[in-house]
Image (cartoon, helix red, strand yellow):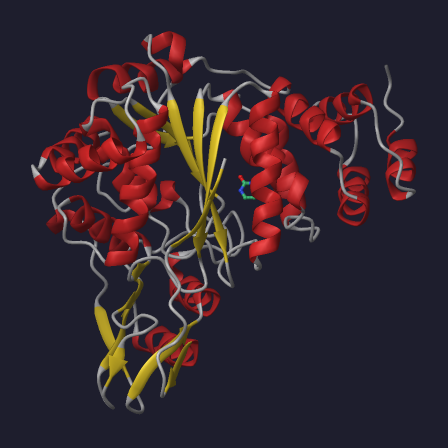
Length: 433
Ligand code: URA
């Protein structure tokens, strides 16, 4: 069938529900370059105003998967495969710590990750701060490494869900990223195409996330759960706080360092809690036949007995990298941001810190920008920390004086210091599914 994109845009603009066949035709034609960007952008904007039904969102997800190849990692390994995904945040290095812990517990962890854009960091960029680390493996190398090492994290293959790649780039420049059914289908299409049997989704909530409010995050979580159910996969959604950066470090090599400290049992409290919780749920969904409590015990034991650190080192070497912390790049300058007054940190704006790190060179504004892996911000004081005037709030790791000064001001502005302790906000806000 030849798609009449203008008819579908008009139908959606007027609030009509598409048939599954119409959605499939539109997406596959777009992937074949038979529908131009301007029509697809108009359709996405109509979706912003009119939404998609559950059936339309599933048809969209299915069509995205059908635009490319799929991978059956479970069949290749002869094991049930678990995967995790975060909707994106500031200082989110969770996969770097979760992968080795889960692998140390005997569950294979093969993950395809993305790059950061805007103020949110990407796992691949963090991994590339490790000298020698290769994120591009062939599918055969990927499977072989998961089989032999128990762990691999690589870049998304160009053949997997190409429609999402194209559509995401278009959405990024047409103000159509933060549309719940489009986010849900984008994330789930990649997870389903990569062959995960069970998926733990970390849905971030707060200023530093796509979903600013808990209500919106619940809607996104429920749509992803629904897509999982329709595809016959098990999905658990964690709603986690992204009103302040996760852990302390924001910036690629700084985050790798913090992830390794966490694998050694020396990480910050909020990040450690999220990592152990995600590991417990992944282990409970795996073929080990254990519940979440036992998963938590095993994850903690892998940290305590050093087997998670050994798994990390094996993994990094297998992908050509040097796992020693001394090998990571270090910024030439470190400036300290000091508290102007005594009090309690009542707010630490994740978005502001993410943008300050981006301006230092830790992230990219467009896909073509390059990254300085050494730079970033370490938030020494987080929400609820009591400080005296002159205490260090944060460290700015910068390439030069000028960028350090700009980041210093921006980071200071991200802090609010008050007289009373802020409302306690746990890292894990809710579990759905
Ligand atoms: N992450 C994705 O992979 N896709 C989106 O649309 C948003 C976040």
